[in-house]
Length: 167
Image (cartoon, rainbow, N blue to C red):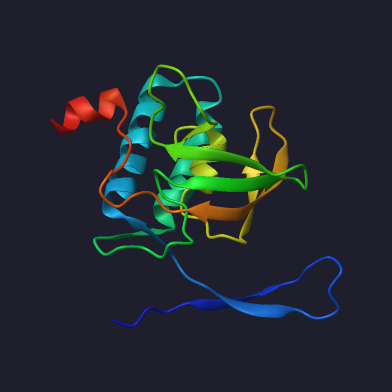
């Protein structure tokens, strides 16, 4: 199967020439894609704080994602990934991307996919930059510095609501 992609110029503010790079659809494991659909459904049903912003980010990720039954590249942020990122050039932060945080003590930062940050990070590649919508309505920039893929036997982190529906 041949994948078509368009070429978009990427211009760094200090660069003198544009660099052309292919832009295709994001590839995510089918499980992550299905959970994005369910997060959107929950978001639109519950209408929590800033639900319109989160619904927009989730819809955008879903529309621009191709679900895959094959393993995805290790530099793509998926559920269970340890992600190192920076927001608007601030200090580098790290966290574990999960579909729903589990209650209990935490040894590291948890980033729920059902948050604006998590919904933006899922599907990004190491080195990629994207706009980050914020709860106050401002737009910042997030860059994925690095990502460590999850253990392939652990599977996606399940939200209790989502787990009950799948049982």
